[in-house]
Image (cartoon, rainbow, N blue to C red):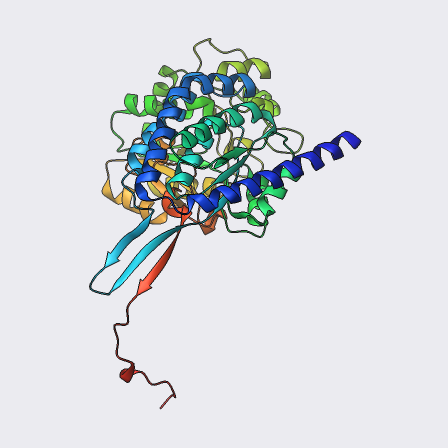
Length: 462
């Protein structure tokens, strides 16, 4: 107990000091011009690109989650690729001007940002949040997950050193090294902190929104994908779904959690999934796997997160081929009594059959309402009426059409803003339904000229 108290006190002190130093850095960031911001961002992007492989190795080694090659991709996407997209955005000075209405907007930083980091993607998350924070001229302090302290700190150091070398003030990007829940709460509530940028589980999201500060935090994904009878090229469809679901061993919140398949093509889709390395679980195997996946508290066993299908099977006592890529459970219910209908951050996929596309939409919404409201949904179809029905009726704020969800929702295979923070809107308890980016991390001062005559005003009610 005494050791825990000592850690809590030491970590809280570290959080206070980091927030104070970030506040000092923020004062200097406020005066940066657009050219200075771009110079710093370019250096950060190059540093992230250069460190992507080493940080991917460190992350997998430290956390035991995910796939090295996929984490390399994520690290590069969150640095060099992100930079190319956000570079043209205006976040300094006058960012828009309506000459007809005599109205223009001037950007200001939001200020110091507190940023909890999830264990599933620490380096990529740090790169992403550092880049969008700097684009808006904001200092940022990271609070790592206890199982990812080294990789989170290393990624923050890469970003901070690159930023300083390009002209940013010291301590513009920091990471706590003494990790505790008390420290995270202290950081989020610190007077120097202006905004919380939270990524993680439901408990973290609730903590962020209850800290008494403006917060942008995103909810969980439980992403369904409907395959219509009109869907084309089922072999390619199956390949893309498996690649998406197994990307980084199923840790992205936007990866498919359930396939909802029209009965007319269900057997063929099932066959094509098997060709792509999916193992369909027998009833006894489903029971055995779920006992391993779900912990005593009803949540997912943390030891199963981000493990490959073969490793998961071995840990659960199942026998699968060495080439197995995903474990698929064919089910018919949604809710607390069907564990496979919830989000599983591993290459485990639920498989439903439906008689009509209307039933498919209803089933997708049941899945979303069970734990992914507002996040993402996909539809594979060539019929405009089906796409339109999902576009207006799906309970998700990202609808991917004929596109794998992990890559589509993050903005890699679509024109959505590239992001590792996918807002779930009010439905999912988030302040935004957008893909979070630099434009969420600035304040805008509206400058308005008088355009109406005061003689036309009636101030006394007459």
